[in-house]
Length: 400
Image (tube, rainbow, N blue to C red; front, side, top):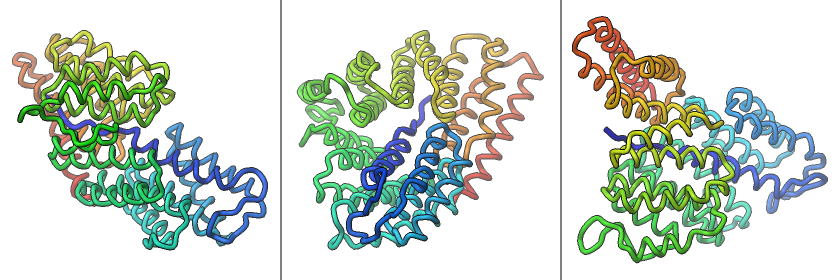
């Protein structure tokens, strides 16, 4: 029983990259946005709002973060600084997305793009970079609201912009995002090809001699290209590729990539990257029929200071393994069910949360099929499954 695992580091990259652009143009003292013609006479106060917004966002305090992004947007508007206002609105949209507040997220991103304008000919490189970043956030909105084809088209636009301004990191991220959209469209071989391209492997795919298998030459090229101190973006591409290879029936190649990353785990500075590594390792060990190793990796994710979505994913995967290993009424399963029951109803509405809830319901159904004797447990499971699926139905109807 497997499902598509959404990669949350995408959210983190969009937010911090766009913020770093603001900090680059607005250091302490007087700053000017290139091409805007508007001087910020006293940027310290508004920079504080931006920094507080990021700090709260990074801590997962999304509701309070909204206030700071709204205030920052208003201050930039008062100063006539359209580009920084667009930045603040982009981050406001992303924060709304984390909360599952999709109408507000759409309104913020549309306003941001209207401020920037969709013409690219007369923009400076800095303005084009900001436009690409805001489009990245819009692509995330499309993907999370069940429109992967539109997300793919949006991320193709960002890739074109990044090529034009020769921004290699942005181009790589756009390719990673495109691969995720392609996976959601069921185009896994094409997604694998795009991920290989993001890692510098050109004119290759995940087939060898007509079979869906990554060639040894391509694998060697990827391994050779991994830097001594792997960076966050590079690690995300490798994580996505390894997970995709696992789904394409190439667990050995996936394991080689993941073990290479595990050896450099100390260089992964973001806990989300580390958690995603252990989650992927757990899924791989589960598929290789190594339940104990899978459980160890899932426990690593649960213990890390990361977002609730990653912890919840790890708990559901752990439950999947435990159901095949121990009795239905074991304290371990009961405690895990109790924890997940509470978390399922607290997840913000999104495509990712709907997938997680359905996957959890599938695990409960598997548990129900195993339990033949305890009638009270069967009734409890049936009630929980029904309630969960009712919630999913309501969420999908209100999602757009």
